[in-house]
Image (tube, rainbow, N blue to C red; front, side, top):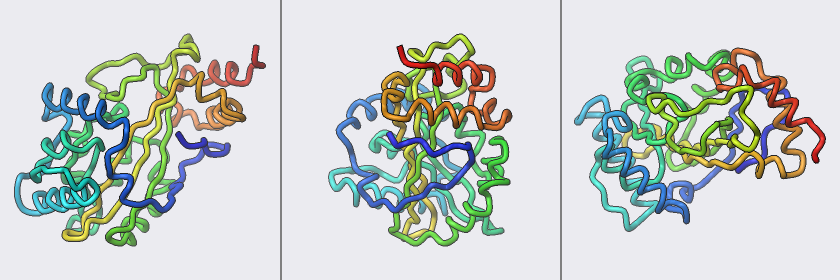
Length: 265
């Protein structure tokens, strides 16, 4: 789990150079793969989707499989979103420029979404995908476009995105109607939910692979770290109201800030 950014709250790229190690299996992946198989069996159309089964999308998937097998030599999988989603512990999205040059979502497998539906995003350019997030396009759209345009094949870039959740479940699909944070939710029933994200341009097609690992930590454990409670309180206190509502903490924010700033003991 990363250190939280410094207040005041703002959207930022926060990129750092990574490597292909992001795409390999880790010690926690056995349980993750079992859960991915469960969701993809229960409702494959909800968690995996592609614009088509041929042409540019098929080439993108083949490119993604090639990257996956270079990171995990024992991996054997065909270029299919469900098959790759079962074999790889990562959620992934495949983007390619459309006729205007805008990066558009062509395929993906997202078993552990943070309250969004893959099917609603398919075929849309990034600006439309990000439109529901208040002020994000205003803050970062130009930087995102510049970054993706300049991304070179093989160069891996990583970033973190954080939030709070009232459940430790990895899969927070809106259709599941899991508990949300209320002013009465105690700190003992909250989790810091972070997305460890990576971007890489695929060499054969020039498309972009956006991969996500979900990391979840009980909030009481997280705020035991030096300065963590104060930093989280400051970020919540300086978060604009519309962003707090989008992140699911709007009604509970004042209560959370007071409890995070309360003296220990």
